[in-house]
Picture 1 (tube, rainbow, N blue to C red):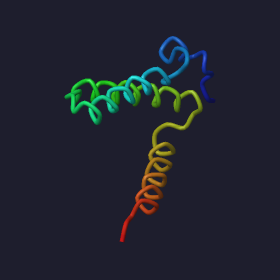
Picture 2 (cartoon, rainbow, N blue to C red):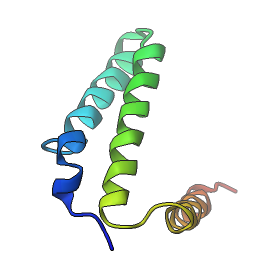
Picture 3 (cartoon, helix red, strand yellow):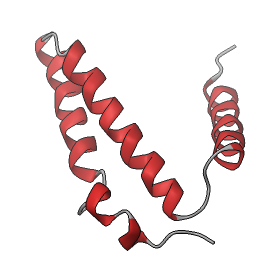
Length: 85
């Protein structure tokens, strides 16, 4: 039985991880543009996003081996599509 989004609503919040992704994008932009060192902050934002995504996957019963298999398959597709010869 999969969990309903409301089961994790207090953890996920609204609008899910969108705010965290926006913060990460701003830090990356400033790092590239201004050469600012946001290494620790970027690490923390990526960790926050990962937690949100794990909880979201749990809501849809796609955790564990199912999530690992999908992640590996998508990663391999990405590698293949960006491979330069």
